[in-house]
Amino acid sequence: MRAVAAFTLLLVCACSGKPAAPYVREHVDGDASKPCLAWPKRSLTYAVDPAGSARTAGDTELAAIDAAFAAWNAAAATCSDLTFTKDVASANLVVWREKTCASVVPAGDACLTDGTCDTKYACWDDVEDTLAITTVTYSRSLGTLLDADIQLNGAAWLYTTVDSPPCAMGMPLETCVATDVQNTVTHEIGHLLGFGHTDGKSSTMAAFAPLGDLTKRVIDDGTRDGLCAVYPRGAQAPACP
Ligand SMILES: [Zn+2]
Image (cartoon, rainbow, N blue to C red; front, side, top):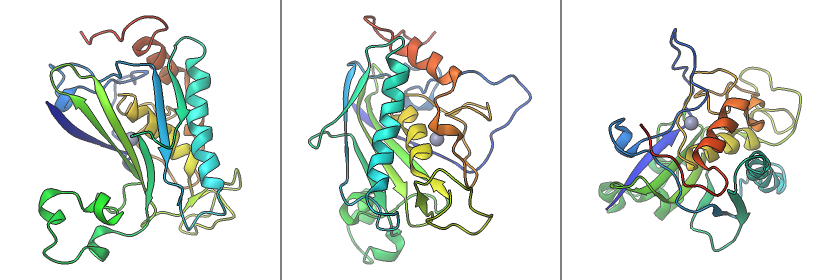
């Protein structure tokens, strides 16, 4: 049985008074009594829509995506046998959506009822101000991940790839850091691997990303601990308690 769960990079802080967990695992159906999500294999692939983003300079966004996956590979090399390899035939896709579905889907289209407008029309069909969304497909009985797709909301946000300076509030430009591609994709890859949001503000898996944020390009110690714990070299992913 397959089910689809969507994770989003939200612009709100889910803060609490408790110490932040270094990492959080997602469960089947978001239900803590059900199995945690994890890939059953360690050699993972990804493909990037070669169209990239028409709003980001040249093909720099494609290199930024590769850098995000490379950051996870580097973190994994310390403790895990998990690897990402780019493969045009991969079912795990990274794509931009640069128009909202509301602006392009004809009234009465069948996709409006079966929820497939985003793929049919290559449009953004989620909450307007969400930066990106990772949709994972998994076994509901086992929690094993089967497929994951990352969509970047280029309809609402200008994705950039420069390293500095941060853009002024409300002034996103190609020449400053607005919504950083590598920052966003590094975070979304965490969702692809079965991790949820943490409350730690400096975590790669923090739920919010202010304009100009680059902190999530770096995989923080807590997130790397999660990667090492869930995908240990030569051993299966531990079941959740
Ligand atoms: Zn997120």
